[in-house]
Length: 233
Ligand SMILES: *Cc1c(COP(=O)(O)O)cnc(C)c1O
Image 1 (tube, rainbow, N blue to C red):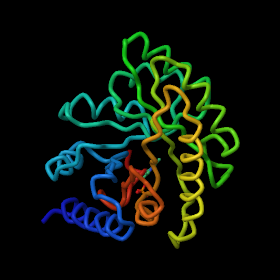
Image 2 (image 1 turned 120 degrees about the vertical axis):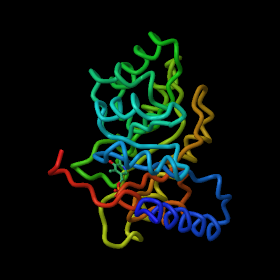
Image 3 (image 1 turned 45 degrees about the horizontal axis):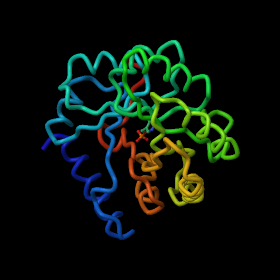
């Protein structure tokens, strides 16, 4: 059996166990195969194993892979997005996970309107307040959600966070809990044009804890495709 196939079976089994443990339905949590830096052949293999959700963090790489891979793939933009690159992906992405400023949202709105499209987005929150990370602060989320909700070509679907890199996944539990709490608070505000349905949290090292805390999307790269080798590209 190929490495990717074996890895996917392992991740899917552990996802199912975490769902079971938290009393959630298996369909409530979806796996995004984070394929950044990986060759098209690796994505094809994951596709053959049933993956339809792929995550990329660079616009050019997403576009190149989009062009050559099957059209039923749902592409997730999970990396920091520059405003001048929005135009290249707005008609290709299924969900943008990384909206963290009003100016970026305004650019997405403008390009989406050109394409007569409604773009689904998540607001990225820096719950752990790491200096090196993008994302709005927990205090600023609500205000940004309210502003973006006014944009007719954008649908706010939920929140995303990138938790710190830790040895013990349990250390990230408070951040996942906090994101969930912000999410629930926003649901209770009943803001027009806000559809809080998705919590994108959990990566290779901590996705089980994220599922226990309510993740609806987990983003797994290394756990499926193996280590990334940034030196070779
Ligand atoms: C790279 C990346 C991931 C996947 O990380 P792994 O630890 O390899 O699973 C998830 N989310 C984001 C935003 C990433 O950039």
